[in-house]
Structure formats: C-alpha cells, structure tokens
Image (cartoon, rainbow, N blue to C red; front, side):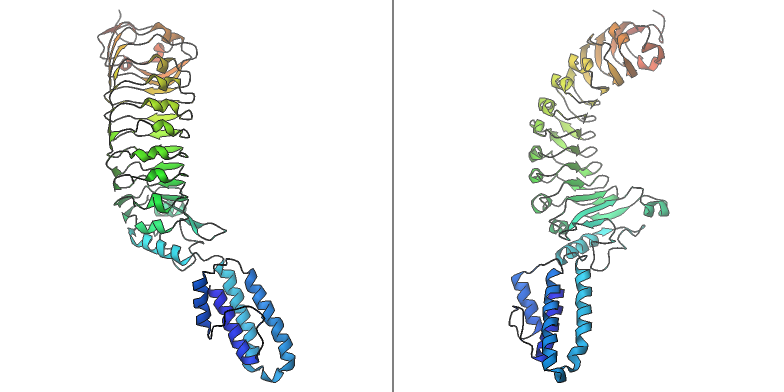
Length: 443
C-alpha cells in the first residue's frame, strides 16, 4: 500500500507540474491521500513490485515525450524524478519482508502478555519486519504471513548457553495469537511459569495448525472443547501443566494426529472409547493424571501405535487382549493403576513389545507359559500384583530379557536356572510367598 501511495504522489506532482496526460488507469482522486483511501476500499494487496515498475516505466516514458515539448516547465519536477524513483524502489524492496499490520499487532499483544526477565528473548521483536530476525518467528515466504512461533525455554540455542541457564517466563498466552490465522506451528514450551488457559479461539481461528506444543508450563483450565476441528494437527503436546477436566470427546476427530502427550496434568474422567479413530497416531502418552474407567479396546485399531503410556492413573478393569496383537506396539506402560484380571497371553507372547510394565496393579492368576525363542523384552516388570503359581520354565528359552521384576507377588516354587535368571539379583524375586533357588535361598 505504501508503494502505491509513493507512486501516486510522484504521478500527482509530475502531472500537475508538466500537464502530462495520464497513461495509467488510476482513480481520479483529487489528492494522494484519497487515492490511498481508494486502494484501502478496494483491498489492493499486491505483494510484488512488478506492477510498480510498470507504473514507473510508463510515467518516465510519458515524461520523456513531454519534456521535449515543455522543457521550460520542468523546474523542480525534473529534480524530483530520481528521488521519487529511489524512494519507490526502496519501498518496493522492503515491502517484501514486512509482515502484515494485523500480524504485527497480534504479535505485539502476544508479547505484552508475557514476561521473560533473564534472557532477552523478545529483545529482537522491534520494528515492523517481524519476518526477519525476530527470535522464534518465521513467515511464509509467499504470503509474508506469520507461519511459525517457536519459543523453547530449554534448547541448545546459544542464548541459553551464553546465559548458563534455562528459560523462565511468566504471564499467559494472549487470545491475540488467534489473529495469526496462518499459523502452522505454535510452540511455547518449557518456560515453567506461563499460566492461564489455552485460548478457546485456537481451534476455530487457526485452522492450518499442525503443531501445538505447550509442554512444561503452568497452564490450567480445560483442553478446548472443539480442539477436534484442527483437522491438520499432527502434534498435540500439553504435558507437564495443570490442566483439569476430562479429555474432550472431540479429540478423536484429529484425523492427522501422530503424537499425543497429555501426561503429568490433572485430567479426570475416562479415555474416549472411540480413541481408536486416531489411526495415524504413533504415540499416546497419558500418564500421571487422574484418569479412570477401563482401557478402551479400540486402541487395538491404531495400527501405527508404537508407544502407549497410561501409567499412574486410576484406570480399572481388564487389559484388552487386542493390545498384544498390535503390529508395531513396542512400549506399553500400564503401571500404577487399579487394573485387575489375568494377564492376556497375547501380551507375553508378542514378538513386538519389548518394554512391558504392568506393575503396581491388582492383576491375578498365573503367569502364562507362552515364552519362546522370539521373546525379547528389554523390560518386563510384573511386580506388585497378586500373581500366583510358579515361574514358567519357558522363560529360559527367551531370546533376551534385560530387566525382569517379579517381586511382591504370591509366586511359589523354584526359580528356573540359566539365562536370564543367572544375571538377576534377589530383588527381582523378593517378597513372594515361597520362591526358592538362586539368587534366593536354596530350595
């Protein structure tokens, strides 16, 4: 807009000095400011300087013809030509970098709601060119609209190394962030002191959001109810905050979601039963909350799920056998809940799961004798349950078992000899009813 006004000022002055017939189809405004107003009304938003150069060329060409006829009238207009052209070209060059006034205002309000006292994170947020050299801000090169805000309180950025400390920021996330409607990435992570709520306007106002990462703050309140409308969201990380309420049912509509981390909050209620609709998800981390109810069997429909962590909640009911048949599930943490029933044989016979922690529950029955040459567990923790019977001898045929913990159960009989039992300590078998053999007492 600034460029067009400069062009018109030059044209206006030149025409009135040389009486040159206009060669361009411009509004017949009586003064430059009216032309500027007209452009605003017409919402002219050209982001390249191509049309500007055409205007300049046309008028210079017109002046060359007119000069031959009216040299005596040139006066100050001839001196004005080079200066105006230089101003216009400079403005054209800079306009490609300046972000939109609306984005600039939104960023200013966003900054005003936060306080970072130690590192000067926002010291670079000055001037009107937010697309260049503003710490943590980047723009779409085509539209010059703000596309990413990435502010991490813990990183390898030299600003942290120089200060010798991690980041600390207070304040809240201003709803003005919703005016940045072209955002694809919003990361405000690990600042420890940012509080307040997640702006409810985010799902409806930022439809292209792909990453929402607010981990490691003091954010409270509920997860926005309509967060499921973010159809392109691939990463949702709200871990290590103070969020309350339930997991909104709309979350199952995040069809592009690959990474979900809601761990270490104060979430209550049940896990949505149809969470299996999130078929693109590879990680679901919901530990250290106050979630209740049973484990949805629909988890078994998420064929890409590799990491499922529901530990340290209040989950009850049985373990769905479908979890043992998932093709890429490698880590399953269900420890420190209120889960009961028998251990599904599919969990222990799975050739894919290599970290299985179902300790500190109320599991009962005997250990399934389903181990074999394909059994490979880096961690197998069955401690602090109500398991009875003997230790299956087939465990000795396992390909690999790194850490095995069967302590604090009601197991009896002799501990099998050979691998992996020959490298385990007594603590792996402690506090059972009547286990014996190395590394415990002799039978």
